[in-house]
Length: 310
Image 1 (spheres, helix red, strand yellow):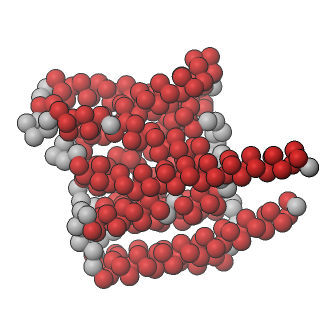
Image 2 (cartoon, helix red, strand yellow; image 1 turned 60 degrees about the vertical axis):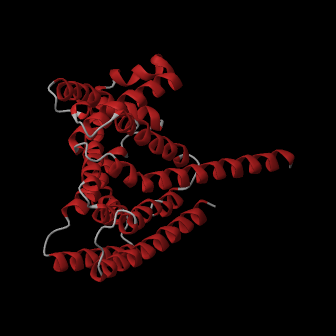
């Protein structure tokens, strides 16, 4: 009886730890829009190449420190897995790069649209490629998300390419990641270690030829040091998410995922002062309602699975 009580306390403690780390991860992701915006006038391309190199460097250093070279090098004997992870790393790098460019170019609200519909696109990929069941709640949520996008399309008379690009690239990344099962820090290192090499070469070229951040008179030592924080500020939330993923149910992770774009949306409107009209608000409300149906459906599916397992 005492052992059962201790196990329950331990389980509750681990769940609380996972919940707090997930909240920290999503909150940090949400506020990062202010960080990327603060790096102006450094060009997005320069920031992106620095970020790719620094994330690869930091994640690899942490992976080697946590698991050692003997464990780390195992991936190199499995070429299929290594190149597969390099592909996923390339895709998520495209996602991050599009996000950074969009924020610095003043499209924070459109990035929020992308990350709001991203869980729905991931679910759609699951249905198409993994034959997951299409419930009535998902049908409703997909329909409302589509209506929200159509409202934006009619209002602006253009395809919300940034939002769709972010949603689709992350959905492809999530679908490919289903083929791998390993600690998050190792995976992050494998995904970025090869990309870090050409990124470093480009960074050196930019700085040597006077096209980099160091050559810009508007960029002092403080802002340059701030830019060097892009590596840890990218790696930290990913590490926190990895900690949370092993301790919190996927449905809770999915629900908490809406915190990040919600924070970014508020910051985009009230801090960065992006234009936000009534039609955009209506489209967001439609998407939000769709997310409610999506969440309810996921909870019901999870409860049904739990009952069957009992």
